Figure 1 (cartoon, helix red, strand yellow):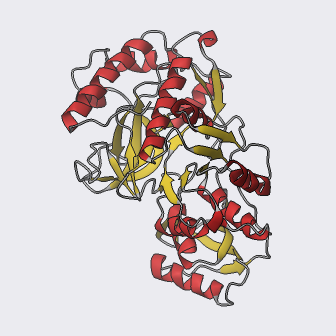
Figure 2 (cartoon, rainbow, N blue to C red):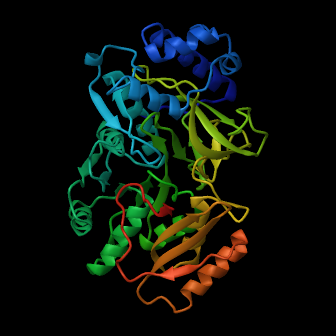
Length: 427
């Protein structure tokens, strides 16, 4: 069930320290992966403060996890208990490497369900709501947790796996579902199919769309496109990872701000190259310690997500949880330098959606020995004006100071995505 927010920063940090002590006591000495790391650093289960923990505990990198999975297949050595204690297995999407398989005990799984209940609560989802999950329930953790959190709240949870987009739209109307869970890209795709099927989304029962899986819900132009596509619906962003679970919820009073669930995570923001804390208002890499996922924990995990802290405390919503301006700004390994300009996928998404009239797009990066060149292929919406490519080229010039070639694609020729969109091709 949803948990009340802390009434002060001090109370929140006391709670985090208590949870950290429980975590360290649980994983030592049985977790082989962390026992070696913690022994070498002199960590003990009764750290005097959060600062001392940050100073003494080494980072955990994704490269370490991948290597450990390779050396200890199929589940790695990052297990606190015997394998027969675990009842859930999921795997990462493999977007930036080989997929990793992640196990959870019933206790860890419930901890993550409780976190999703908090996300639903901040989005205004209640027991009398009907939640439609436009998601194929495969090995990725995706909305599995959200589905069970909906059940825990007492809401009617409606699975939409294994169906066409048209069939999913019909189910939304049949069940009068008022909450939709999917990726931002797929919410736009459903709206596109609705037009083709003659379904007027002005008559849709959907009042809230909870998006996750990729940046978009916190990107202003994408958010605007979603609200235009689903008239009357509120867009609520969220992000998480298979390795750490559901991490953030949208600020109830400020769309575009994601709060970290700090009763569940110990967050830090560091410089990606130096590993030192960033200065106030600077962009850095999000680091997380999973305080309640004892069965397969992560200590000071470098997520690769680029974020910028909102410095106001408390937030205008009255909460003390760390706020992230603009949500997830990009990935450390996603940035491409094009003729001296740092380009992130989220910036390209903002520009493309801001111009409008683009049904789908694809970015191509071509590298040679000295530099990278970027071009964009767009699929215009039916009825878009003939100057769309020119308008988009001007938008890239104005926002990124780059001349970006724009190519027009035939209708319905670019791929559509249900899970994470893969729009970037790097040659």
